[in-house]
Length: 324
Ligand SMILES: NC(=O)c1ccc[n+]([C@@H]2O[C@H](COP(=O)([O-])OP(=O)(O)OC[C@H]3O[C@@H](n4cnc5c(N)ncnc54)[C@H](OP(=O)(O)O)[C@@H]3O)[C@@H](O)[C@H]2O)c1
Image (cartoon, rainbow, N blue to C red; front, side, top):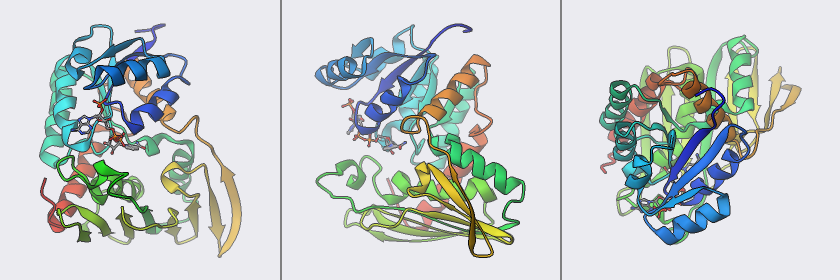
């Protein structure tokens, strides 16, 4: 596929599809070839606005389009597993929005499909690829703050049941844990790996989705204290505490445009590392690299990373009694 534009198809033309498509247009070797909605009017409108070449009124038609190299799945959580597997079966590489599935079992099925068909799959954990997070990971691994013993991260906002319907909809896999709780869990997993123990408590909605969930990930000599909520606000900062200093990511930390390094309680340095576009551009570039190198997984957010995070989420789901 050398000297060839990577041809993208997008399915599910909601909020994130629009934001992602805007970033796709910033990448020189990307082409937005088709957009598919369950509604042709919506697909045409999107294609016109975002400059997609073709508009389809069914996701299946896009999967069958021989021109498409990779499909970006931007539908609600409950559909991610089946749509990812379908796209892979049709020979399409897949970038699927987080969370890749609502169960660990389904995450395993997706990875098996990627391996079976020898096609690239990645969960769209865009935060993994933004410059600030890449830089922090490198600094921490080189001992900039000594041994990391503590992480504090949250993702919380006050959502409304009328304006944020998907978030409160049990059928679609709503709730704090699956929508935003995965971000602080991701940060802890990225820096400290798979935990030894997990403890979680939630406050539930009357329909049984979690409105807010607090989690502790316990490691040999570290703890991560994490929180997600769709009913209250937080400062959306993240702190990484070590034996020789701490790092504070700028808010909102999952999209941090920089961070500060503290030593002996004094700010030693501030780093400005803005992302390209809204930040989705970096995961797009990673997909291109993998596809052009005939790799079916990213080394930065590998199949095993996707599975590990899904297993952590599954444990919390069980502890707080979430059933989809
Ligand atoms: N990476 C990020 O920063 C980020 C940010 C927000 C959301 N997300 C993730 O992206 C996914 C979509 O979130 P969103 O906020 O874009 O949601 P959204 O605005 O509700 O859009 C979802 C789209 O999915 C399609 N869809 C298919 N089946 C559906 C159903 N049964 N009910 C409703 N819509 C259905 C619809 O598109 P058509 O009508 O065109 O088929 C809809 O517009 C979620 O997995 C979410 O976690 C990621």
